Length: 158
Image (cartoon, rainbow, N blue to C red; front, side):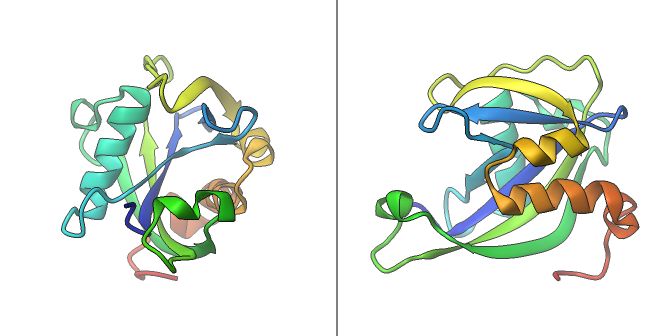
């Protein structure tokens, strides 16, 4: 059973392009890297690093220190009814924690074919429009337009 605590990792480069990946279980549903904690004691940062590696093949540890940024922002959303069977009975909401990962423009992406069909780099405005998830759209727009997201947020959760 899935734990209703997840991470969303906004992967971007210095050109302000955002990586979106197309879900294998929902073609034409584009999103950033997302995933639930594997265990209740897994840290959010470890989950973010693991999900990035699993879904894109990108090794966060091979990037410069500070490339992965915890945005210290969380949102709660209703889990789509068609996906609730993956969670314990009665669980209807998920708590999503936002991260950003800056990568080189020429980084190689290797998708997990079980999870994703395709990937695309888009300017952040276009990426936000293409996302099926409103929280993913919000994460992209807030990151690129609100200064406290761009330069680190030490205020804690919002």
